[in-house]
Length: 376
Ligand SMILES: [Zn+2]
Image (cartoon, rainbow, N blue to C red):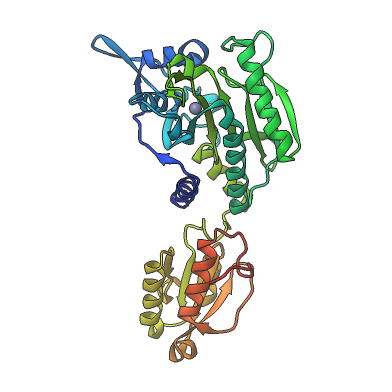
């Protein structure tokens, strides 16, 4: 399921013009001194490790690594916006008392990206990021609890340049106003380097958490001395848009588990198709259907009579979206009788037809079990 989620995000990002990178989870302490994490965020960081003359730390964020990748060569304004994405590890030194399941962990796999762009491009990039988030929520069946414009509060630990904060806040406010979504401003929730749009989700008890974010950052491009060559041949400072579509994979999975109680949309389900031969005699047909399903990219398996009566096997597979029963009659006609997780039983059809329809529903990342209007 986690792989399915990660593949979805990478594919959506690729189509949206992102380029994927890998960067290491260890960084020199200096890197975080430059970014400002060391002075603003060190309470949440693991203690540094001494390594000869230098100190290395488990990274608390991916931003500095991406800034260094950007800085590793010069860029023309024609290359912007340059969208750099990574599903990478970051670490937060939480005390054991505040850890909780998958929602609050010490090792976080973050769906992260940084867009390096001109100031004029930043609003469009923030808008496009919100649209990516909206589409992902549609596919996942997640409803945001609310959108939040997260601002600093007086006296907080932030990098100080009031003009920079005002510009970034005005930009995000415009993006939210134009998008038409309702949002609330919240003081004290900003990142130390800039304001952000947070997409909040709520659990069954109404407790809110941030899943997705879009941030405008003038601070780190300055600190890392990033630039691009403009049409005038001179050096200019890019803006960094930080954004995450599904946030930490751990938190996203935790939310989905709670939301669906294990009965996930077909494209996310750990097993998408279970094939149930009524007796030993239909095992060859069942194995062949699974082989063809797997070949088509589906997560399919056989649950044979050695696992109990047909009724018991159907109950055991109750969270699997599609169950294909093959009895003597179906086997003779090269057919399957499909049962859907919601209890519906469909007319017998050829195995090929069933696989094509299931495959198309999965490929469309649809939350509908069967009736979605998609072309096959
Ligand atoms: Zn970042």
